[in-house]
Length: 71
Image (cartoon, rainbow, N blue to C red):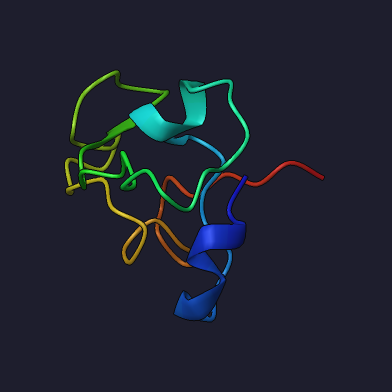
């Protein structure tokens, strides 16, 4: 799920969601990315996580109090 965020250098919380995750089509390099920077948290269903901080790939990482990763 998070291979497009590998450049960040840290794991991303598994509760992070964005609309591109729900497009069931193979990548097409001729079509612009649907990634519009709008994220939400599965736990709160809003743009704020349970810790009331903004949900974003840069911030949803290990060390954040609500960080969750599947094991």
